[in-house]
Picture (spheres, rainbow, N blue to C red):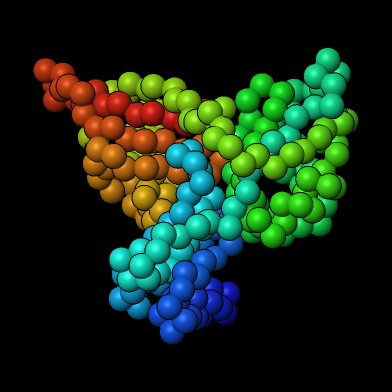
Length: 251
């Protein structure tokens, strides 16, 4: 309870500071659980001039921003940099995964909240991070597992980080979140419900509390440990009234 109260107090302070100082304020990068806390707190406070900034379409970690262009008269400029991480020698580079890159970053002693998502394409990666920590990372991240790497801050458009999708067709009895999760992850309905009970499922930044929650086209689903998805809705129905639905998974 104390931790929740501290989070609420911090968010309320940021919202109030934005109004009093007539400027944007923002959090660091937030996990899905923290995003859920933002949604709940802002609803309780009745504060409407805020939004989530996500540096890429596939982003799971986001920044909460307080203020609006209409209210302040200028656009928000995110204090975020993109760091390109590539092997010094591609020939001797390992196949690295998200956990490898994240472990190397945490070994530098930085706070997880200063870093956002890591997009991996073949033997390269792109890291979103707060501008305040970007120079430190580029100067100090020189090895991921046994692979020597070099880092550079990217200021131009980066076509490589545009999201790729896996297109999934699912046959479900209803548009319930537990039914859709079970189908797209190839799990039993009970295991899908367990993920919900373990608070690992989020829809549109809000924690899902019931497997009976009904999805609608355009809903964004985050399942901790399984990734991010877009629910595109019903394609067709069978004669027995089962549904064929479409889902896109970010890859």
